[in-house]
Length: 361
Image 1: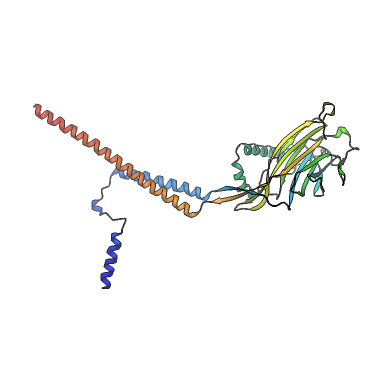
Image 2 (image 1 turned 90 degrees about the vertical axis):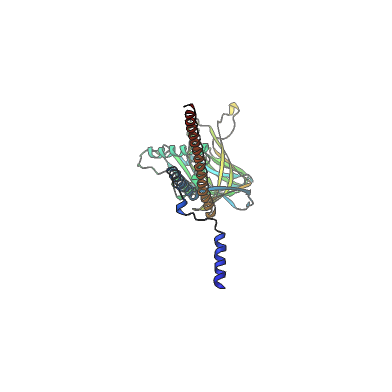
């Protein structure tokens, strides 16, 4: 009884076979079939390799939500060189609530304004990358995935011990401010702190020494991450007028970055530039200096690095193999059918000619 039940089970399984075997005596091979099979297998291999590279690659997913964090502080990272001596220039921040933020986190360093050939090459390369980023926004994803490994983005130090006079002041460091609109001032004179307003002591600075030619080596908001290139990095402005005002209007967008290399809270920003000469006689009023006016957006962007799941890769791979196999089989049968029809017509034509000749004779 057990043997009979096993035989019935095996026969039932054989009836369910979707891949029946054909005896080799009934199989006929041809040169055209071999050629088509070789092309099909080569195409399958090529597409499978390309699909594997697609599977290894990642892409960035952008999600938007309302920024509900209003109590935390915003960090501003600054590295600006002004073509004036450090004793003649001062920097501070005044926010929307008329709160003057102390600039104790900023350092003043006397430097040479002109760059060395190596530094100039670095700056030109950075400006070239900036121009490409403005034209091709997708390159930002490449920076997120590659330059976050620790590529240097700061101005390299001077390679020579130049004896030129120190005619510029490098203002660098970071400051924590409230997450409201504010204004970073870099102007003549050191700032003074008092509750009734905002002022710089500029009475003892000669007007002929005013020179707000400057270079922004780095300006970012939030956590400073090596590899991210910000819109103002590498910006250089040269002026030959003592009364020149430079304004940068910035909109800061909180950004949460989650990649396979790093997870950090940083900020992206867009900027609009404006500059003009201060001439009170012509109606152009204001104060000479560099003013960075920033405002924070109410939206937060989450940038996540995504990877194709394994099951999706296998499904796509099966689709490639099955699709090419079925398509080449159909084409091969169609070509064979057309060839048989042509041959049949040629044989019929020859036969009819022979019959016609025999009847005539």
